[in-house]
Length: 309
Image (cartoon, rainbow, N blue to C red; front, side):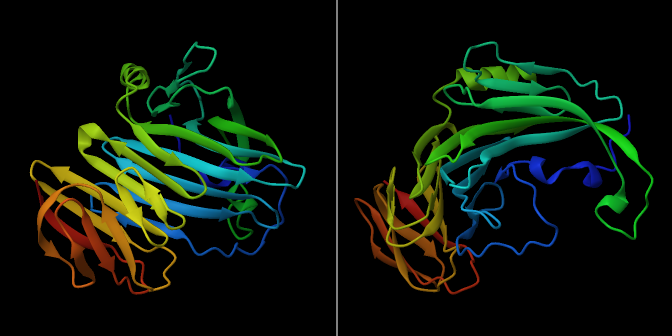
């Protein structure tokens, strides 16, 4: 089965993990102007966030992707618009090739908690959802549809699309789901049943934060100064904390790239700081760790290693 030639067949309304209204758009619309786009990572796990503003519309949202072991945790909040148009979040949009025979399974509960696509992986919806829609369809297109100097040869491929419907003119809508690439149906169903694997500390327009206790991982995207779980910041920031035994590592970035110093507090007992980047000033250790970050304007990650009590 040939799965190639995906780009000319991926519609602008079905880009994976996007949130958008369903109206048609003109080619060449300018990009939106937002400050908070970016995140922080340690080479294995990561936190990524986007302050979304619609193109030529009133749509606004905060979106986060927390990348962990075999799972991307996707959170959306503050989804608001007033243009009289339905707003959707595309969970995924998979090219199944010419035949399109991959088996698709959906939890039979009234509020489905998971879905699975053979050969691709699955999705978990904590607590279940009534907003999920699915569609399998054949799409026909050519490279010349998106680039006038390219081939006009038309090809057909089958796609499986999953999306969440936020309704017309949503106010403060939100979503939460887990993407599990390559996972088996049994693994996806088991994850949906394991309500303790993921702890969402916040999913609002002010902050999106989560913890995976089994990985000793805490991540947060702060859209403004505030607190979530064990973390507090004095300005917008992205924070990733990992613990392993008696050691811990905190990484921080400032996606808005103002370059202004700010403070971060990790409310966990710390014996001492063992190393820190030159941009990190230790203000306090002991009952909690308090740092001042001088970030610069390149959106870089700033690291602090500690010994835990």
